[in-house]
Amino acid sequence: MAVTRTVCNPRLVQGGPMETFYLKCANNQSWSLNQLLYCSSGLLTEAASNAVNAKYVALQAITDTSTGGTTYCKVGKITASQVFEMNELDGTITDANIDKLYSIDVTTNVVTFDVADNTTPCLKLVQPGYAYNPTDYATDDIKAVARVQFLQSVLDT
Image 1 (cartoon, rainbow, N blue to C red):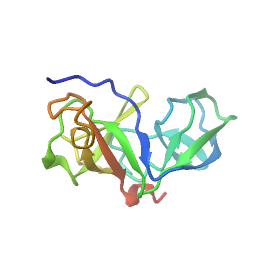
Image 2 (cartoon, helix red, strand yellow):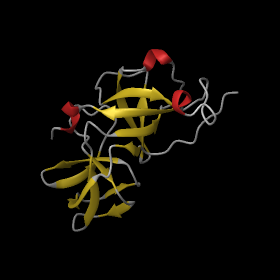
Image 3 (tube, rainbow, N blue to C red):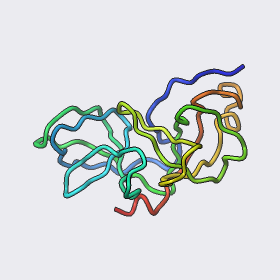
Image 4 (cartoon, one colour):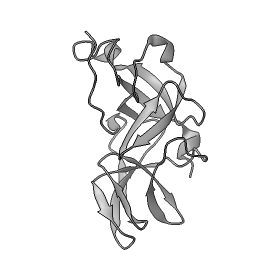
C-alpha cells in the first residue's frame, strides 16, 4: 500500500563520522539540521535548487540555525564515499532509477532529490528504500526514501 513519506533532510548512514568544523554564516540565513550548505567568500549559505553552479553542495548543517553574519555554525564536510538517506521530491522510485544522476530541490529548509530532474546533477541514487528495508518502505511510496551519494564534482568547492 502506498504511503506518502514525511520528508526529512539527508541523513548520513554510511561512511561516517563526518569531519566537522565551524564557519561564519552569511547574513540573514536560516537552515535546518542536516540541510545542505556551501561556503561562498568564506560565508555559509544554504544550497539552492538546481544551482547554476552545481558545485554548491559540500557541507551539511549540524544544528538548526537562524542568524546573521557574526555567528559561527558547526558544519560537516560531505565526501563522495559517504552514503545518505534522503527523500524524493514528490514521487516514487523504481529500479530504473538506480545509478542515475539527479538534481536537488530545496523547499522551506528541506532538501530532496528529484527523479524528474537531472539538469544540474548533484547525486547518484544508490539504492531504493524498498531494497534495503522492505518492511518499512514500498515500491509505490510517494516522496520515496533512497540511499544516495553526492558526486565528487559538486563537492570540489
